[in-house]
Length: 149
Image 1: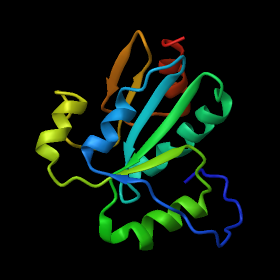
Image 2: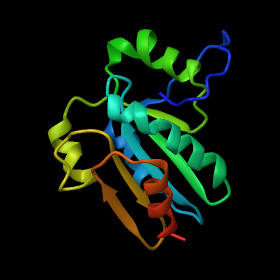
Image 3: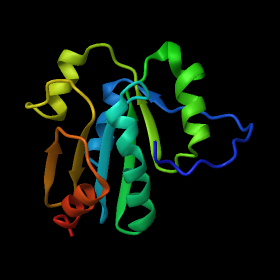
């Protein structure tokens, strides 16, 4: 992991947990920004590897973009895995949790080409929307983002 690890504190982390109907608005936000929505989980090694790139992108382009990290972690691991992960790595992007076991209904709503594997990313703004079924390096992510400006 390439996170810059900051000292942990003891503050409580409140998770924003939704079924798909609660996540869907994050895939259709309106405004002047470009939205970068990444579906990930703490148990997914490629997801964890690319998370620092999303955090760096959010920091560099904070006026132009909003990064939304949609966790697919298992409900029984919120306390033992997800919250400690968020705290340990001091994730600054918006994090929402998708808890909806009916994957066959919501996966095709995100993109018909999605096979359910993660990580995936959706980047969109008022005039363009693209779906990425891949893991990003920082350079690849920034290059794709530039096509939205």
